[in-house]
Length: 261
Ligand SMILES: NC(=O)c1ccc[n+]([C@@H]2O[C@H](COP(=O)([O-])OP(=O)(O)OC[C@H]3O[C@@H](n4cnc5c(N)ncnc54)[C@H](OP(=O)(O)O)[C@@H]3O)[C@@H](O)[C@H]2O)c1
Image 1 (cartoon, rainbow, N blue to C red):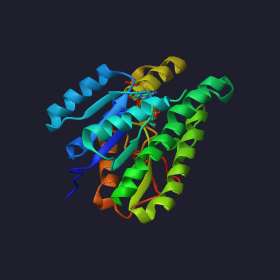
Image 2 (image 1 turned 135 degrees about the vertical axis):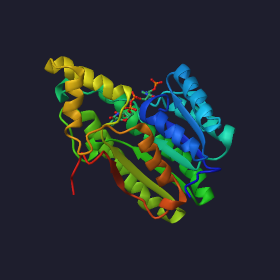
Image 3 (image 1 turned 45 degrees about the vertical axis):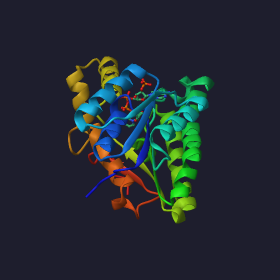
Image 4 (image 1 turned 30 degrees about the horizontal axis):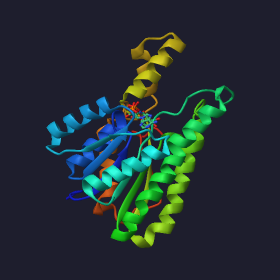
């Protein structure tokens, strides 16, 4: 049976959408979860909802992925609340979506800090805990853009592929310590971010929200968007003893949308 009882997890950007789904699912499977984002009120709501759903208390702390001091505070708070870290799940805010020539140096730098440097720093901080335990799980939740780069997504296409490559590299270095490192490439999931993309598409193409929704759904063989808890279940599996021989992978969860071999 899948259980994460007694495992101490950090899940990044957990105040809504995919991150919130992962937080809730890991707590449901028994993990001690610490999560953070920039908005403590949104995190308070997640904490209350998780308690109502699972009877478990999560640890929340305000923190910005792009600020290295905040990352240090998050790890400190997680260790003080639950103990050394067994599980790290990297999930991110949204990098700017625009044509390559429309993206400034500052926008590139923000996303490099928010996505790539945060992944490097958080991994570096928790790996010693995992080495000491001779056990650990690291999951980088990226995007289908690592398998199928999309138009106007140059930041996402570039940085997320780098994150997957980092995961594969770490998987080699850490395998003998029973630490697995995997990435997840998700397709379209029902979140605020996707609602914004659909709204923008409907305005640009002068079509209704329903038509803009159908345009995307029709590209997905399962003809629906995923629910954040479906990513949560995949993360929980990868973090459990059931996935002890899976490492260095980049696993798709997209209702069949990307068909690269
Ligand atoms: N939904 C999809 O279909 C889809 C598909 C592929 C990839 N993705 C990617 O998956 C990730 C999550 O997307 P989502 O759909 O769940 O979006 P969402 O519902 O908008 O959630 C984004 C989360 O990131 C947090 N966040 C944003 N900037 C942050 C920062 N600098 N530091 C800490 N937390 C930050 C937000 O919380 P606060 O506002 O409280 O900080 C929020 O909890 C994004 O990187 C997105 O690009 C999503």
